[in-house]
Length: 346
Image 1 (cartoon, rainbow, N blue to C red):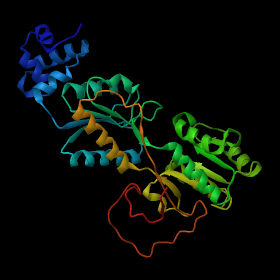
Image 2 (image 1 turned 30 degrees about the horizontal axis):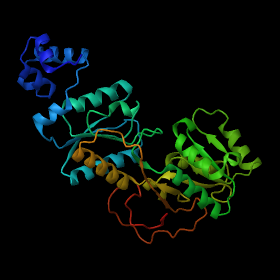
Image 3 (image 1 turned 90 degrees about the horizontal axis):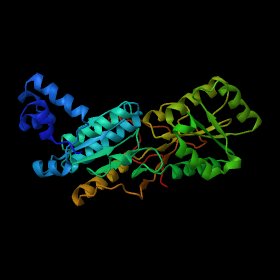
């Protein structure tokens, strides 16, 4: 049975206008007692407004809802900022919600639907995103396989890193990650590049044998080339290696992932795959605009994969000219949209 605002009005003993005001966030128009009663009934009945009716009533709100995990890295903060800028160029504003668990994520989606946003961008998802399609235009960048419509090409990313290390003579290349379960697509891309029989993985999360396993891989297996699945972990690996008298890149060559701007401040500077946030933001916004204009409510089965770039540092064996001067032009989080210095196009 479909619950309407009129049903809530009858159960709460108020007018439909009062229900509409409360559910649209105009709390100052209704007393606290009535407001709490309306919200409680709507919550208990899992009320969801009809998006088509909202569209007819409001036309366009020119507001886009963004669903973002509060636990994501600074790289994703940069992505969210660039999505916001991209939406602004299209004359849209955005409303941000940061659900911490699966239930809060569902509530965030319902909230955006209830206030009549024109579309939703899911930057990171906990639940199966497909349950959110069919009522309002949605674009997903969920990290899980079969759940995203736009994202960085992780298979290509790993191929770039493996090939670059091999160009330096490191034919056996290992991968260091927090846990493979959280970087499954990077792992798949790595396997596709090196082959299952030549794959070596070292996990850093809750691994009491980390020191022994790393020493075995470095000394016994002679794994000298390493891909690290994020730059912060790569920075910690660099410090660990140096504190244990390993030389970088002679004893262990590293390529990180993210393109964090601080990687040029460590010694040696870190070679890193640059996360293409600006191009992802543009592709995501363009797809959502097409869906809104055409009234498309379905999930896009053929995702758009954005190829990354490799920023060269010294950790892989490259020789990089030091800066000739210091120039302060702002505090960027990443090398995305940089001037191209030390960036290999792929």
